[in-house]
Length: 95
Image (cartoon, one colour):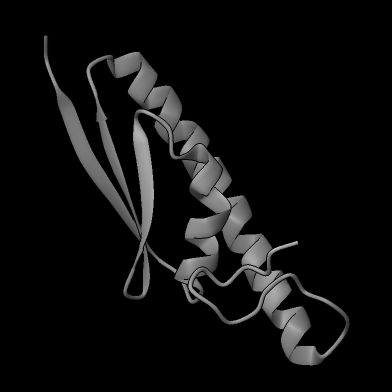
C-alpha cells in the first residue's frame, strides 16, 4: 500500500485562533497545529481520493476560520461587544 504524506503551511496573523477553530477537524488524515506566523496542516493517509476530499474540506474550513478570527479580532479591537477572542494559549475564549 502506498503511503501519502504532506503538509500545508499558511500564514495567519492569529495562528492560535485559526488552529483552534480547525481543531475539530483534526481527525485521521489531517492534523493542524499553530506555528510561528501561521498554521501547519500535516496530511497522512493511504487512499488518494480520501486525501483529496479531506484537503478540499480543510481549505474551505481554513478560509472560514481565518475570516472568523479576523472579524472577531477586529471587533474586539474596536471595542464593540464580546468578540470570542482573547489572549491565551489558543486565542479563543471558552464559552
